[in-house]
Length: 279
Image (cartoon, rainbow, N blue to C red):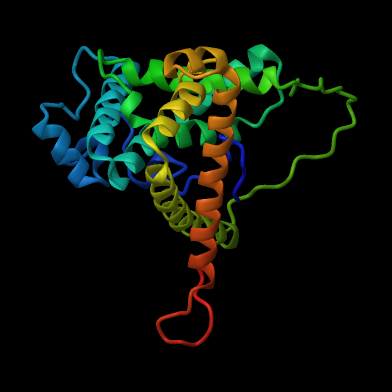
């Protein structure tokens, strides 16, 4: 799904549960610790002096903050798909929990999963804005991004509608973990992982085709959450010009990605027997 919105929600095809590759603190883990599924990432962190096991005086939250910050710093410096996947898988649950808590405090009905996806799209787009100044740097940074998304959604007038409890709500759906349901779910996850990898590749190419000024403008507005007037002052342009810069940059990216993804879907297969599917 493509959108002209800067926060187009895309499904993240990385593990939705830590059990697929990450190990909970306290489990018996191999030498690569919590990053057993990404040995290359683990080796890179160890070379940087990062201890991948929880310290004896380290709480679970402190351990997660430290590893998350190290992962984000690694992704900022390497921009590899493996580093991003490991970062997402390691931090997804805690980030979504924080988003849900903020939405509850605001009384908002917005979808926390959609906001989570938008948040990590921005994390992927703007790694250069991250500064690993302390062990909790990623926690602070990613919450700032998520909070800005929620704030801008409210500023656009997307206010929550209170739910009325009638006492006559339907019975909840039976979600027993039968084998057929589990097999179907796992197959969908595999397909979504592949689709998101393709999406990120097209996104990166479209992003790199923007001018340095356009990338800087988008970063100021979408990541740092500045008003158009504030960003315009930094870039030394007029407020009306700033709005046009942002609008055209978003349109260019959306158009370039649409062209690239349509080409991927309708390109001839290697066997010459029709159309090749993107996933």
